Structure formats: C-alpha cells, structure tokens
Length: 241
Image (cartoon, rainbow, N blue to C red; front, top):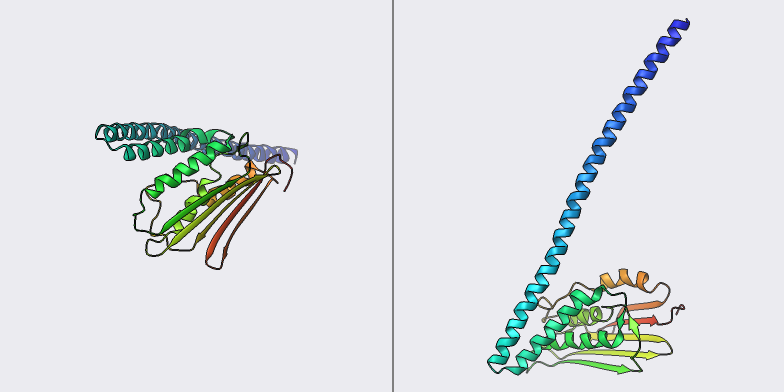
C-alpha cells in the first residue's frame, strides 16, 4: 500500500512537472511574441516620428522657396501669406510640445490661421469672421492649441459661399479667468479645411482638457436657434470654477 501511494505521488509529481513545464514554455513563447510585437511597434513609432520630422522640414523648405519666388516676381502680398502659413505650421509642429505658451502667441497664431483660411474666400462672397479681445492678455500662459480647434470647427461647418456667413469670436480675460466663445451659423461648410493643417479637433480637445486643466475648466458646446456655440472657460490660477 505504501508503494502504491509512493507510485501515485511520483506520477502526480511527474504530471505536475510536465504541466508546469508546458506552462513555462507557453509563457516563454507568449513573452517572446510580445517582445517581438513591442519591438515592431517601437520601430514603427520611431519611423513615424522620423517621418514627422522629415516632412515638416521638407514643407518648410518648399514654402521658403515659394516665398523667395514671390518676392523675386514682385508679389509681396502672396509672399506675406506664405510666411504666415509657414509660421503657423512651425507653431503647430514644433511649439505645441511645450506645456504652456504665452496667450499672446496663441492669439497671434489664431489670427494667422484665420488669415490663411481667408485666402480661399472669393472677394464677392459674404463671409465675415469677427474677432474681439477684451482684458489684459499679457503675462498669461495657457496650454497650446486650445483656441484654434474651435475656430477650425466653426469654419468647417459655419461657412457657405451661397449665403451670408458670419463667425463671431470673442476672448476675454478677467479676474484670473479666460473666456473664449465662438458662434457660427450652421451650414454644410462649402469651404472646408482640407488644405489647412489640422488634427487638433474638438474631440481631441475634449480629451486634453481634463488632463491639462483638472477641475479648472468649463466647456459648453450647443446648438441654439440656427447657431452653433462653443464656450471655453479656464481658471488661470488653478482653483475650480
């Protein structure tokens, strides 16, 4: 009987050893596969990063070439617009990696964004983009690319060449709070933004705000009587709104 128990124990131990070996081999294979997948993703990410650095550099060189040719052929207005586009792209590609940027700089590039877009508007079209600023915007820093997505969305959906289109933009700084409001008529958006650098849409902004301004922001987006209204409020000194 003792021999029988010993035999069963040896068999059970052998089965356990085989099962454990199988589990370890399976884990090793899965781990190697995971390493390979992670390596492939790392290489893919590095390649995408490399491309992101090469392509803007190439585009900037092209824009610089266009700028030089515009001046050479005595077209200063075109040269000025090319310079604005290059400046806007440089801001989007390189400076948006910063945690904070001066509010004045964000406003400057927002104006560039509007002016670059307006190149596409025919002289006879009734398209009006109004931008009002109230309060002291100096010495204030905000996270980059917070304002442009609202205007991008308004242009994309609020302008129709067949009828009068108005976009009202207002920015106010008061009592350590920033209020930014964009109102546009609701159209199909005949003038789209396919040729304007984008990628920082409202959906992206909705994901960024809780991280950038936890408990220190309000975002309201609504439709009201034929108008699309976006309102962003930021607490500039961190306490909740």
